[in-house]
Length: 81
Ligand SMILES: [Zn+2]
Image (tube, rainbow, N blue to C red; front, top):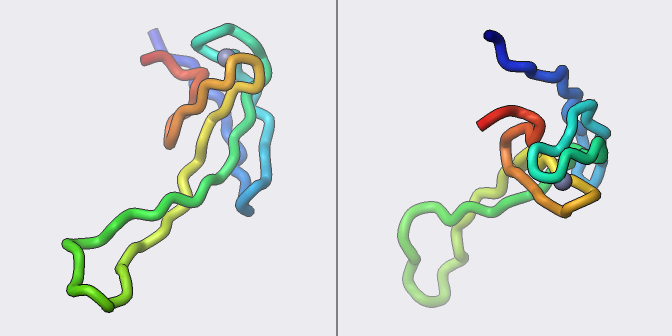
């Protein structure tokens, strides 16, 4: 049995929201949007005081349900699992 994997058109800009044609696996509502969020990831250990903190920021797709507010990073909330 194959899992249903919807075609996802990921947003291309921060703050852009793309509706996802899949039901929320937590509340069943068809009101899921995919949005990009910027997430900073610390790199390495802390430097000496006075040094610039080093971090790399990357964007992650978030599947956010408008009905129950559940958000899943980097996955589609409509998928099983
Ligand atoms: Zn939901």
